[in-house]
Each structure stands twice: as structure tokens, then as C-alpha cells.
Length: 145
Image (cartoon, rainbow, N blue to C red):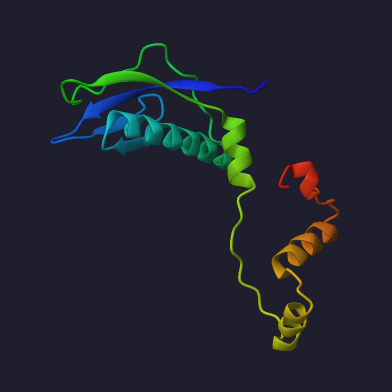
């Protein structure tokens, strides 16, 4: 079963339209949206990324408060809404995202690979995993098919 975490976000109306969002339990975790719906979605993304960053940095993640301490300078008309994330899903998505890495190889090696229809990114990934003794997960096991 996936563990979910819910923090209370303070949705503060901005001048004109839109909402800024902050989490009293997580200083520095903020977001914004042009509409309440967009602000809620962006707050969920911000919360997931913030918790992931804290985990990566080895920071202690505070337990969510039952009642948030709203900053006294918060604009009138604010809303307090629960925002839920599944940290393991965020972690899995971020840890397994594809990143671009530049490598330098002789031109003739690149040409040979192209002639043979080889995927250099895949070969490099497999070679690194093999070198460190990790068996690659097959595409069918990942569900990429």
C-alpha cells in the first residue's frame, strides 16, 4: 500500500487573480496558480518536490500539523486546504527520469554505431550498470511495452 502524506497549505489570493501557496510546516515550500485549481495542482507538485529534496539532503521532515500557524501578514480571504502527495511515487519518478549526458567518443565509433543502428544511450546505460554489477530491468518488467 502506498503511503500518502497530507500537509495543510495556505492559499492566499493575490492582487488581480491567482493564488500564492505556502506550507506553514515546511518553510520555503511555496507555489502559485492563476486559478484555485491550478494553485492546488502546483501546490501538490511543490510539496512533492520539497519533500523529495529534504529527503535527498538528509533533512528531518516534520510531521504535518493538525492546525497550521497562518502568517499574520497573509491576505484576507485565504483558504487552508489539505494537499496530499505520495512520496514514493514522486521519488520513483524523479530517480528514474531520463537526463542528458554528453560523452566524447571517436567519430569513427559514432559512425559505426549509426551504421549498425545502435542506441548509444542504451548501450552506455547497460555498460555502466554492468560495470557496477547491477542487472538492468527489462522493458517488459518495467511495463514500457
